[in-house]
Image 1 (tube, rainbow, N blue to C red):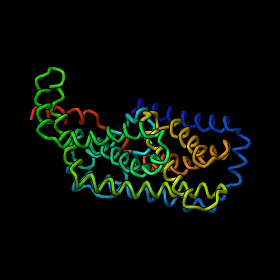
Image 2 (spheres, one colour; image 1 turned 135 degrees about the vertical axis):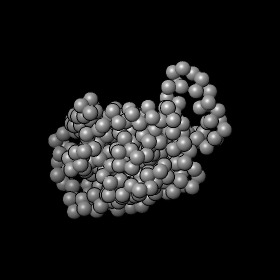
Image 3 (cartoon, rainbow, N blue to C red; image 1 turned 180 degrees about the vertical axis):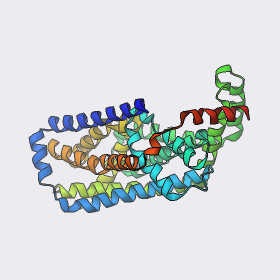
Image 4 (cartoon, rainbow, N blue to C red; image 1 turned 60 degrees about the horizontal axis):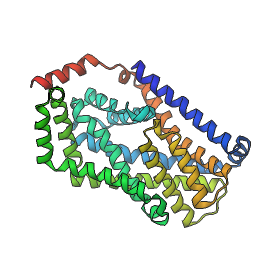
Length: 330
């Protein structure tokens, strides 16, 4: 746990450095002046849309958890686990996020190996949703096609491969004959069974549908940020806001940087300059504000959830190991 928190603290420090760097590159005084003129009356609506995004994503998380066997899990406990997982995204490559599977096991008894696909399916369905939301923008800017198609092919490939059950079972049986892989074969089988259930066509459609609505709301929140900075109301600005935030979310995710930090900010600021012709300081101010109202707002909620449920931090690692040993001998 000390190692985990050191990585999250590094993510927090890196995030602070990214914000300061962005402001310095765009002229920190000009950015500060732009932010001071922001119309703060938009903030309740922006945060409301961010909370709506979190609420719909929680519905998806809880739906996924029930799909892998956590049917007796109270929604309040499920919500606590979901929100407490927000700061884990600050770990490099989001490597700490599988900790949510351990918390799920503690709360419901679902094997950790079966819970890990829930975390992966969350990210994958969000990826498909933001890809769909960014489609029109990608069509308008052909330079983004290669990256868009590569990510789309990768995500769809994972979903399709998980549903070709004979091939998956053959690969698992083949792995059982390999000395190194055989030690983890029971975990791999549990994870595959979880992934198979979560990526069924109906489950995938439900999850991507929820993702579309939730991330569209966050895109509208970004539009309100631009309105608060003085941009005139227009359908074009709204559609560009949705595209920029969606595409930048993809860039941040594939970068494997903590929370997408650096990659997402550069993408947002750069795309705003390309699509709307914003000045450097205006694009930087919009980027800093939307990241504060989304990423950092969520991290703050997650840290508050962890502070109010400290037992989540007291992991019984020996019990986790015993569970794996029991599964191996069953």
